[in-house]
Image (tube, rainbow, N blue to C red):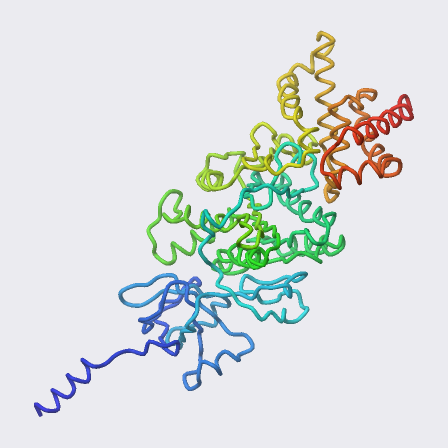
Length: 517
């Protein structure tokens, strides 16, 4: 008997659990998109697992299922692990077998994704079949260090006059778009994508639009608009709709960053838009509370700042040694009643290189885009601005600020002196010039010419109310009569003395033709 007991004790002492990816566990409990799993002692954070209803097959066979249910390990605990279910949670039940995949959460990347709509897991959701991508990369990775980066010095034109002149964006920058619901944040981002069509194909950035927690109808409308205007040729759409599990909404921005990084690593430029990070923060809060992590301010977990910082730090302009590629990030944050001092807005403002603040008051007054030039800033973009735009936009912010101060006195216009009236009219004209129709971004050479006309008094011949119509006429006139000037500005990226002379001549002719018309 003693020998048997000693033998059992020896076998217990020598027992070592399997350490390979074939290690399996059992679902102990499940609910609200979270599974508690026993038996995965060697699992690591953010490792993928497979929920498999069949016990008598290999991992290889299990992965051949047409619609597998994956999980993401997010909590490592003494008595097991907790995993977020990435799919239909109703198919996961107590006692179900769980298989380790032996790899971190990875998604497909590459040119085969361009023009497609995919889920945060890289699965095609546009009904056009598989993406046929062959390269997979981890969805999360460490951001490039200081020595791998180069200064931001190449402009990323949005095609929006108010932005490119006052709040310029450089390739590799992180510029926040912030404002209340329904003030045109998404419109600004989509116009930035549409404008890349005017860029030369060899330097055109690949655009990634990430829709987080949005209505599927809204995302479908955006995809249709991009397709209609030919922008899907260089765009990838990643969607985690409002109906998707919180885990997928949390992962969507990281998927977009991973897709963009692939292009950056290959020496190309990429632009990624996160629409919006407020909804991602809410999804992460929901997951964290279900995972029983301690809540902090506004019930958000303590690492919510780290969540956004490790995402946005992945945007970079790489050094020549690293290929010289770039990843520009335009995160979107939704505020409540214009409160930019709330928890999530202040966090993201502190991480980004500036912000575009859209005001509902300006929007309601008919200002499109409704950008508050006083509170908006670009901390690095001016270094990337073209000489042409720098030359013409120097005075704009000051003139608008002065106009905002004087605007309160407009109702007393009859009692104002001539100088004040002139300033107010000049501010109104400039405001009208900076207005822009949705979905109609302008190439930077046209922007430069129009703003040159505005700051040099070529609209003074018209009343403030006529300015908007005259600006459209001016664009048509310049395209018809001053093509060589526009192409010269585009080629040289500055307004030389000769070009300025020709431009002034063309603008004066336009004024003479239309004055009093």
